Amino acid sequence: MDILKTATEWAKAELFSTPFFVYFGIGFIIASISFWQLGKTEIARAYIIPALVAGSLLIVIGLGLFFTNKSRVKQFEIAYHNDAAAFVTSELERADSTLKEYNTIVFKAIPIIIAICALILLFVNTPLWRASMITTIAMLTVILLIDGSAHARVEAYNTQLELAAKVLKL
Figure 1 (cartoon, rainbow, N blue to C red):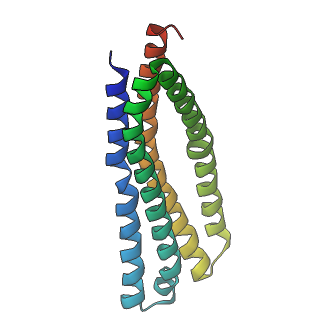
Figure 2: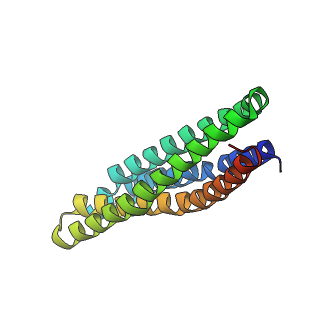
């Protein structure tokens, strides 16, 4: 079992999936521009700013994750060759921490925020609030979709790290 290869493949898979944040962000920005140019009704005009904000946030998230993982791929080989046991230990700690964050933020906090936004939709009737809540729900749904697959990858990676730790007797 080559844990360096596994780690590199995991990071490259992350590099493939994180641009989807950017793609969806661009889609939100295009929607914002379309509402700005073509929106005739008050509710259509109300989507301009929320969609622009959501698109910008998704782009920032995507670019941040992309460049973080890109630098990580280069650091893996150096760290592994310096001290394989320390590499596996640090990656195992990071993967465990990431899994806990996913369970707290992605699978608990985001659904709660979506539910709150849906409840607000029931009680608020102004176009800007409605557009903001619907856009927030859409953006958080995109995050859930992308992070759901990322969670599965980091879980599989964590399993491989645990096997490597047993082999190295850590």
